Length: 97
Image (tube, rainbow, N blue to C red):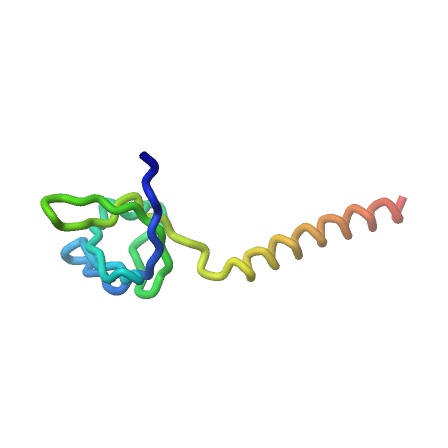
């Protein structure tokens, strides 16, 4: 059975207690910092995330949380600019020969 990723935004996070809540279209869901990607630092309010849901004794918890690119259009634009710069540099180096 395939598990479905849900999307939401970090509503609140308490660093002293190590947990918080993610707001989704269906409502709020609990998360623990141990289920957050350690390499990305602490969760920030309104940060977009995707996650799987695990049920435990009638309560739901977000697991395998991943950050979602907050501005995919800007990221794509930056990649295109970098690619264009590399092409321009290569063409210019050919003219200099």
